[in-house]
Image (cartoon, rainbow, N blue to C red; front, side, top):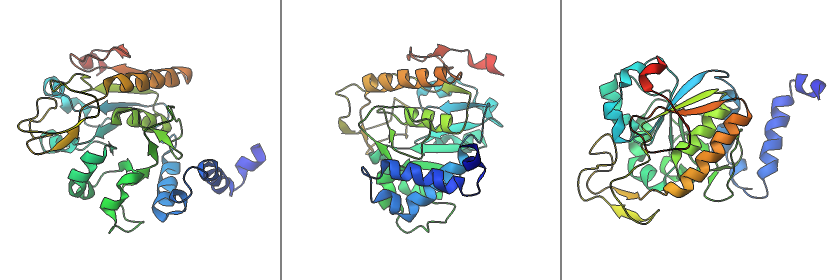
Length: 268
């Protein structure tokens, strides 16, 4: 095995194995140049931040009570429409992940214009059909799924969404070698109530996120599935702990009770 790893062909053999492992489930995807490019990029990102900490930034109202300026220079994973905060912050998150179909559909032009590494679902490729496979603005497409609960330490294959982009981002952070993932803005609490996964259209300002225009009037979105996301979070906690890593929750006033709590200001 050591001799194989020393071979210059080992990366090709390894990536081919990962592709063939999932081939019966997704034969078309892995033959597509965009997925091949995604696998290449993800291979380069494997353990790129090994042993380091990173902040996973949710989009809850608690961000308004969080000193975000302290994150400048940190490794940060933004999600969904966090880019609405970039002008105020004066810097961009290191990465951005978006997996919800409705969010991607309605913000595709915004996402295409962002010049940071972006991780989107393979399903969303239709909104970026004019981009060149080698273009730096092309998102890295993840092959995510709604079923088959699992935690994937290597995101080049199929990954489970766990009903929340935060769970996908936890898997991305693990893939990159992050040893301490710190949650902020993951309030785990919504003023808008209703049946999980129901699609609704906002009729006014958004009370559930840091910006009233986040899911503002006319925006279509799905009510959260907090129960499924908690199942996913427990899987993430276990995966991190088994690898001698950890996830801590430094959300100001957050309602999530899965992870060890930390005071945000004490982290600096």
